[in-house]
Length: 245
Ligand SMILES: [Zn+2]
Image (cartoon, protein in one colour):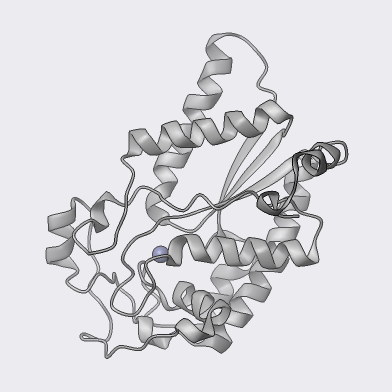
């Protein structure tokens, strides 16, 4: 069930049998010369929407802008500051919790979001801790590449050149879902450099085409299909565990 394509009475009825909701969350940021700017929100959305067809899941609209200050040196990137991002996450959670959702699961597609999402969770829980009230919901963050079986699968498909940004696995997922949007580019160097992530000018100087440690040109539609299928299985399994928590 997709929240955006439901009516309020349908959500009201849904809440009588399940109080779990999944929020795909990502970022709109550069992904090297052949990766789509939407890659980090597209991947969790693609996986969640595919899983919704197979399991009894409720998927919220995609939270598609994240913490990407370090990518602002590249055209098309849109970023929230950590403080803005945390405030927005808190409002999303409190809106859903107000209706009675008690299990709120963020399926994340951007490594740069992790610290801020975790900090937002701590802020939200703090409100209950300081007032000595029981928090009526639980929150969970899961990166799609940490779903059961995915890291092993990606390591097998891409023994070299996977890297950490504009990875062939994430680009393959978008290509499999949108084959008419497939792009190609001659990678120079083949495998991008690695290094620390700081501010936008430093990032642009260290990683001139935007990739980190990856060879995006390894991505294929076929690999993407295999990664999506395994991620769907992993997500349904992970949600069943979360429901039982
Ligand atoms: Zn990415």
